[in-house]
Length: 156
Image (cartoon, rainbow, N blue to C red; front, top):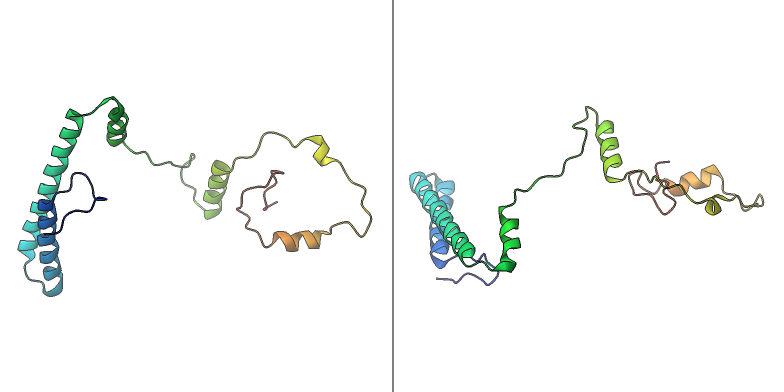
């Protein structure tokens, strides 16, 4: 019988490994030729019951022997996980959903750009950038990318 690896869960035991092996064997047989369906269902129940029993025993042991530093771990295990949702609900059109997601995850910067960076430079006609050149360069970037240091998104 194989031993559980050092990376497996702390509650895992060799008995669980054996019950799981029996369950997977009967499940494969039931899938392959349709026989042993009843045995598969019984093996599944035994596997899940044994697994729940071992996990409960391990958890009870953990709580009984918990030290002061283990309280944070216990808190994390018992905490209900909340999925992060985008405020505002669902949109009807993909464009509405995209706009809500972009405004939620990439909010507009309320700090204005400082005046020295907005100063106009006197450029000669050869040094000026045309709208066509600018659009050719920006066309390569995604409209949904985060804005750069100037806080101007590529979609603009």
